[in-house]
Each structure stands twice: as C-alpha cells, then as structure tokens.
Length: 402
Image (cartoon, rainbow, N blue to C red; front, side, top):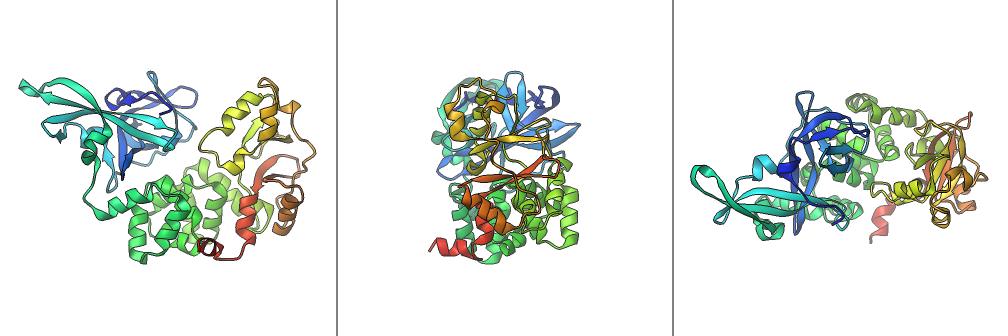
C-alpha cells in the first residue's frame, strides 16, 4: 500500500477541499464496488456541496489528510449523485451489516500501487450490547469478510472480472458478446473504466455504447476520456447528439473538445491532445519528475515535458522547448527546466496533414511533437500512438490479437 489506511467513519464529515485548500463541501460517504477476487475498489466519494449530493471520482482526489480531502484539479461535477446497480455505499449499505455473530462497524481504505486505485484493506467488527451499543471492535483484513462485498448477480460478477483486465482485452471480450449483453455490461462499468474501454473500440462500436447511455452518463464518460479520443468520438456522432453532449459536459471539459473539433480530423490539430505535460520554464527538474510520475498521465505523454512561458494551460504562452524524461534523470533536481530544454525540436502547425506529421515523428524518432499556433503558443501535442491509430488499416486491433 502506498498510503496510510483511512477509516470511513473518520472521513465522513471531513471537508472537501479545492486544489488550494479552500473548503467546497463535506464528505458524506464512500462509494465501493466489488472486484472479484481482488480487494473491493473505491470508485470515489459522495460529498455534500451546495446542499446537493455529488460524486467525486477517486482519481480526482490528490490527498486525504486530517484537514480534509484535497482535489487534484479545480473541476467538480455538480450533477446529483446516482447510485448504480452493483455499487455499495460504505456507510449506508455496509455499516451495521451482520457478519457471523458480529456487525461491520467500519472499514478502512488506502491507495494501492499494486491495483492502481483506492481499495478496501480492512474492516472493523464488533458485538452489540444493551441499547445496541458496540463492544470492543476489532480489525480484520477485508478477505476474512469477502462475502459481505459479493453479489449474486452473474452480470455483476462478470463485470468484476472485466475490471481486472486491460481495457484492450475487455474490448476484445465484449465484441464477442451479443449487442444487448454488451450494452448491459458496459452500463455496469464505472465511468472511468468505461471511458478506457471506449478508447479501445472501433468508432462504430463506441458510438453504439455512447448512444445507449443517458445524456448525463454519456457526458461523464466523455469527460473521463483522453481529450483527443473524446473529440474523435464526438466527431462521428450526428451534429444534434454532439451538441447535446457538449452542453451536458462541464465547460472546463467541453471547451478543449470544441477547439479540437474545429480542426480537420486528418491534421495535427485534429490528432493532438490539448493536455500534454506542460510546465513553466522556472519549474525545476524535481517538479517535472514528480508530475510525470503521476499514475493518471499516459506513458506516451509522460515521456517528455513541454516547457512554456505562462500561462501553462493551452493555448499557453510561448513554447520554449521540450525536455525528455531521460534528460530529466541526468540533471540536478534543482535545475530550472528553461536551462535544459531542447529548443531545436520545431513545432508543427495545427493544419499540417497527417502524413507530414507521421513523417516528422518517424524522421526524428519522436514520441510526440508539439503543435503551436501562429503566435508560437502551444495548443497541444500529437503522440505517435495517435498517428498509428490513423495510419494503420481499419480493424487492425482484431488482427493484432489473433
């Protein structure tokens, strides 16, 4: 485990804090889902914000401290929380549940490097005395009460198995199922896992899944996807559906997608992600290494840092250059990034055709190339995997798995 376990009873009523530590609400419960033979996974936290119960994805929480749960980003989704089939609320559904001759009185969660998420690590069991008071609770590993988290629904058990697979393997398994069952299983997956799955599917299959969800859920899933993949999917939807989904998304999430959709799909602008790793020139090597170590950053983006003048959100200030991960490892930690950038890597324009982008990546053995506007501001980066998705023949994923 990579963090100290925290008991749910101590988390509830703690403040939910923004990135700067300011209170924006309070924690009300913890949302959990069974994960087959693995520890139950924490999907996120239910919080009370502005007198409404909302869901905060666990991946968006940076720290759990005695002072509260601090957000990793400044964006929260104010849509009302809705519990789905197979999901368990720790306090509402599990507390006071009988386990043999005792009762479940609490459970602890922790961040796990092994499972790449928050998981349940132990539970507190206690007996009841007169007037329902609890006596001498004791702590046991979650595995000793695993049946408490299990479901008798075969489809939920199947979904639990899918969560343990790589998204590409989940996509392969779902494609072999009848459309109706494929849709039901997809609906039972949590939003971030469903987003990973959709990124692995051909456009026509991804569209079927998105169109089978209600507008609010579909918008949430799109927000969890990589921006370039979400833009590609929106681009093949009918204009009316695309507009409805963009309106349902948070403005901070929809604005970059609208910008991507304004470019030709076979150009650098249409292929790029607007969220590469971007830091200012005054940031240090140590700060850059801390950022690229973040689990949520895809490996193809973590390979290099784009160094700019403020602001650092796209479109940024002037691009100063690029620093590769290996260069970061060779520099003293306190070195400012502006002193170790590679300024010779010329950016491409958003309207550069796909073939020219592919040639640039191949000629210089690059994992990503910066995309800048006429003013020299970074607007995104095209990664080699995005180019491969476009230049490989249709259906290549199926062939590669035979």
